[in-house]
Image (tube, rainbow, N blue to C red; front, side):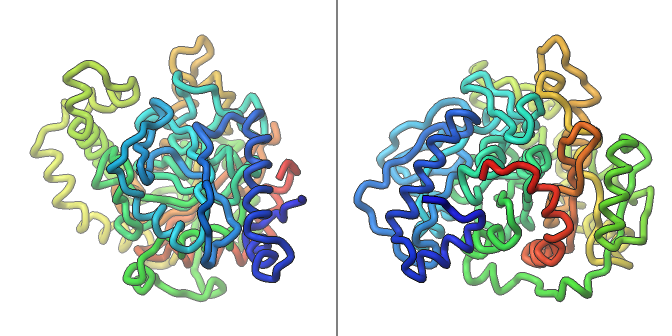
Amino acid sequence: MQLPDRMTDLLSMVRSGSITVKQAQDAQRSKALELNQSFHAAVCFHDSGDETYQGAFSGVALAHKDIFDMSGRAPGCGVNSGVDAPQTVPAEVLNLLRQQGAMHMASLVMAPCAAGATAQNPHFAACVNPLDSLAAVGGSSSGSAVAVASGMSYASLGSDTSGSVRIPAASCGILGLKTTLGLVSTQGCMPLAPSLDTIGVLARYAEDAQCVLQAVLTEGARSQLVEVNPQQLRLKAWLPPDLDPEVACVMLQALDEFGVEFHINHLHGFNDLSEWANQVLCKEVSQTFSKALQNAIAEPGVRSLAKFGTSVSEQAYQDAMHQRQKRCAAFLLQNLADADLLIFPALQVPLPDWREVEIGASSFCKPKFLGMFYYMGFVNYLGLPCLSLPAGRDRGGRPVAVQVLGRPLMDMALLEWAKSLESVWGKWSQRFSIH
């Protein structure tokens, strides 16, 4: 059967009786299995057996980053295909989705231990960017972005510790929401740097992302969200002076279409915040994986981060943690006193070829590799919600994305704003018809 392009339309079909829950699930699984042969996004597909799926998400089959505990299965976390673990209970986000009728169809490839800004992974076949097979796929939620962009899954949950939802979303021309720190439970999600770890949502459409976000929030968390009228939001943009000129040109065109007139070229605190974010990230990675590091079995990405972490003094780390809330308040006062949303680049450079950002490759280009995550980490240190979305195409036809930063708990408001402008940004994600 022909599946609709939007998850919300599929749900309407199921509710109206046009198709049954089983027919919808089977069609999604069949499509995902076929597409995975070309794009290599899945670690494994899960057998639903004779389970019944009742709830608001009945008929929807989703695939998620292989970083979440499942019932009786420990995740592979980009290192293996997962292992049987009879005592393991599902991560809270998966449990919430399951309670509402969503099937967990597949677990998706990720950078090993979530410690990577690209899809580079020696343990699995390389993820292929559905927009351009030569283009890089960001990490660490690489399989999630590929699955959503290719049409394997309407949406996917990923984790974002230093851009791991937003980077792959930007590289594959889809939406990627990094949520407010603490809004979505990380219970049952493999930690990387616990004080920075957040769960995020990747989707092709803002309304689909809203539905998934709503589903993984507890009632208490939902009540905390800030509700705003998207038409009344005040917008400003940061155009960094070190931004690649080609990206800047595309971004300026997008800002004009978004109706953003107020631009700044200096973001107060960016350099210091990025440094503090890096200190916390690397220090906590060295703590999280201390046993693997001691036993010399840690993945290369973990070793690279932890190497810097060992040079971060305990005093510097504690200072970064103790001053964090005050620094966030100062950032908001200095940069968002006159606006509600701040728009700035996702990648510093045009999306590179995957060979240019694969460490160890003969054509590896360090500036392009660093440009994949240069504008990411400070957001996690601040703990603010941030949405990556496509804003245009570069001269090679590859996606150029922007990030949209909001105040705490404006997660749903960011998606509501994106939905209100879907006729503008959505055209950039319609170039490919594989969905």
